[in-house]
Image 1 (cartoon, rainbow, N blue to C red):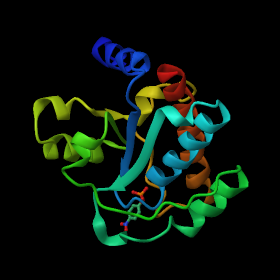
Image 2 (cartoon, rainbow, N blue to C red; image 1 turned 45 degrees about the horizontal axis):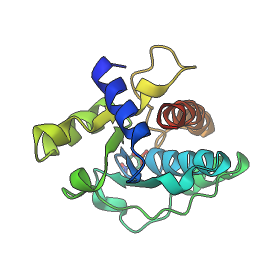
Image 3 (cartoon, rainbow, N blue to C red; image 1 turned 180 degrees about the vertical axis):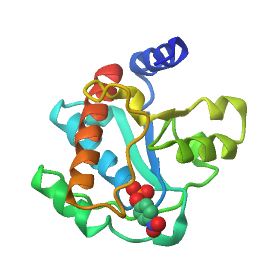
Image 4 (tube, rainbow, N blue to C red; image 1 turned 30 degrees about the vertical axis):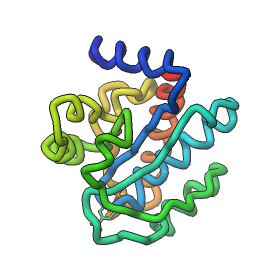
Length: 172
Ligand code: 4NP
């Protein structure tokens, strides 16, 4: 994590007048990012700090717009206690003004979001979810589980639980 990201997180954590707005982004918005949204929401609810946050997710590919998360992801998440009810939606340019942090899942998401950002300040809002992983040293991306088996979904959930706990720690 860069010093400038640490400073930005500290500024957000200290902000008491406005909610902290977090958007998770992947490709389809039916596997990784709705799972991240559900996990992060569950963590902040458990900690009693949910009223300080606005949490959402979106996808760079709009082909699944309106759909609930992939049934495989819903099943794997449900077994861990997460009920994923988000409906897929595409990323829009207003997301850059509507959110403080935009967390990408992989390098492709990261570079496409940065290229899409309306201003240099907005570009700095785009950060990697894996920057927050404490128990997956060296991880640079949350792997796309769409064409994988059950293990792929479990790995995604392990990484997202790790990252979301540490993100919540940074902002609490
Ligand atoms: P996600 O997974 O980006 O984690 O939601 C995918 C979902 C759909 C597709 C690819 C990845 N797709 O090609 O339709």
